[in-house]
Length: 79
Image 1 (cartoon, rainbow, N blue to C red):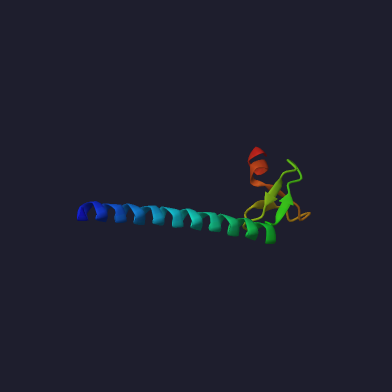
Image 2: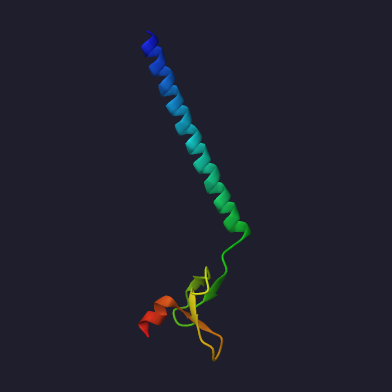
């Protein structure tokens, strides 16, 4: 019966760990959502396709020196 008791304790520990990982995943998801609400991504509209392009780096859009406007990378490939 000691073996059976040990297996039962092991199963309970594994279930507890799975539960804690599930709780942590839910907590992490809510924190990410809350962060996105508090700090929405900066976007700029592409004047050609009119899509809102998230500005995540200096290379997110190709800017023109003449007017200061830019186009998204997808539209740049079409030119």
